[in-house]
Length: 91
Image (cartoon, rainbow, N blue to C red):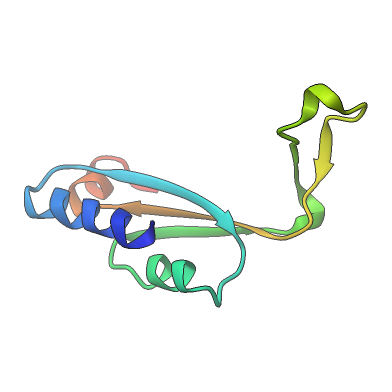
């Protein structure tokens, strides 16, 4: 998926079109996907949210008494933008 995201950004950049993508993924900075996005020329920001600081609503919330779940791992938020997107809407 990371390669596809970068391909879309490359295409938009070649056409000088603005494109912004916000990617939410586990905070595993040593993973291949994180490494590709984190080293990208399009990366404008990345935020690491510690596991203790956030949670989520479980997909099976309709079958559970407690719908909120504490996240078991850190989460990364990576903002990627073409140059024209960064000029129009800087992060």
